[in-house]
Every structure is written in C-alpha cells, then in structure tokens.
Image 1: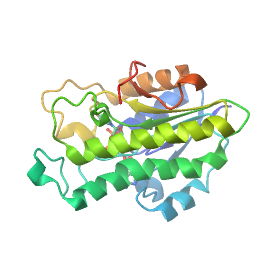
Image 2: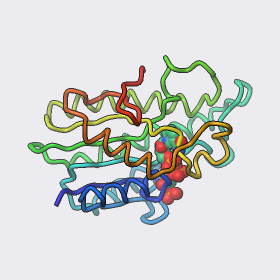
Image 3: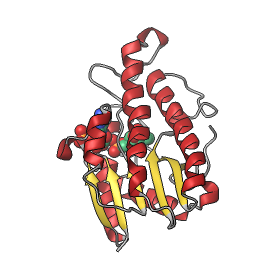
Length: 221
Ligand SMILES: NC(=O)c1ccc[n+]([C@@H]2O[C@H](COP(=O)([O-])OP(=O)(O)OC[C@H]3O[C@@H](n4cnc5c(N)ncnc54)[C@H](OP(=O)(O)O)[C@@H]3O)[C@@H](O)[C@H]2O)c1
C-alpha cells in the first residue's frame, strides 16, 4: 500500500488531507503539535518526531503554519512591524517547513516516485502583491518559496523521481481564516484537500520546485 505522511495533521487543512489520502487508498502517518508534540520552531522536536516514522513515503504534505502567532497579528501598516513578529513568522512559516523537509529526506526512496507538497500562500507572491499589509506572513511565505525552490534543485540530483512543490490551498474555512477572511469567499477544508491531492498527484519531476495554486496553475514568484 502507498504510504503518505501529513505533518500538521491537526489543522483544518491537515485533517482534511488525511481523510482525502485515505480515500485515495493511502496508509497515512500523521504528525502534529497537539497530538505528538511536534514544534516546527524547535529542530530537536522535529528530529525526534520524524525519527519515529516508518517510510518510505510516496506522498507528503507539510500543512503547518500560522497567521497569528501569540500576540503577533498580521500587520495592517508599517508601524505595526516588529523584529519579534518577523522572527516568529520566519520560525513558523519559513524555517519550520524546511527543517521538516531536511528530516524527511531519509524517509524518501531514491529510485521510486515521491511527491511532497508544502503549504505556502498566494500572499507570499511578490508579483501578485497588489494590496500590501501582512508584512511578516507574506515575507515568511516568500522565503519559504525560495527555500522550497532551492531544495527542489538539490533533490532533483539525488532523488530524480521526487517532486517538491509550494502549494496555495485557496481561502479555506479553517481556524486560520476565521478572524481574517472577512468578505473573502472560502471553500470547505474537504474541497481544498481534494484539490491539493489532485494537483500534487498530477505534478511531474519537471515541475518540481514550482509554486502552484489549488487548480494546478503556476503562481508568479
Ligand atoms: N486556510 C487558508 O485559507 C489558507 C490560505 C493560504 C495558505 N494557508 C496555509 O495552509 C497551512 C494550513 O492552514 P490551516 O488553514 O489548516 O490552518 P490551521 O487550521 O490553523 O492549522 C494550522 C496547523 O499548523 C500547526 N502549527 C502551527 N504552529 C506550529 C508549530 N510551531 N509547530 C507545529 N505545528 C504548528 C497547527 O498545529 P496544532 O493545531 O496541533 O497546534 C495546525 O496543525 C498554513 O501553512 C497556511 O499558511 C491556509
């Protein structure tokens, strides 16, 4: 049976991804902060949690992330930007997923296909940023995209059949968006998960390192 892994399986999208992967016939391993003590801001915690896994995995989603971290809210204006807020966003949304990927590599087969989707966000696109605001979250996701793109180049040398992609899930009705979606239309997590699993399954190694939305369209950096 195909083995999948969802990191951040307690989240709104993470939970739905677990369900969607069960439906597509995967045996699904899960990791999360609330269920397993995985803290992506602490590499020792990542190493300990990842060492418990039994791979190799052919499908992996890293679905951790946060918009509001402690007292740090998404900034509406430059005067709200702080080094602490920027650092918290970098630790959670940029450094966290790439350190998970670092500890995932031993669980990937070198000679069989594997697909890894890391949840980014369209607001991390510099070219698509017409509204401003949300300085630290946008910037952390832009940094995450560069980290993913760079890692994909390296993995293409050692794991030729592996696909690594930054994925935008759409605006999804989860705890994450509850306070911030405003008048934006949202989709249910189950729909987002179906979209994301279909997009990831359809990507080829030639598309590794890209940034794709829930419909499979490339997003500009
Ligand atoms: N929802 C949207 O509309 C939307 C749009 C664009 C991008 N995204 C991205 O999609 C991803 C998932 O979002 P979601 O809507 O599912 O959010 P969510 O329901 O709030 O879930 C967030 C997940 O991240 C985990 N997490 C947060 N900080 C962590 C940390 N320091 N260490 C380990 N785990 C941590 C949470 O773990 P616990 O709950 O176990 O603590 C939870 O599993 C995020 O990367 C987000 O940026 C979401």
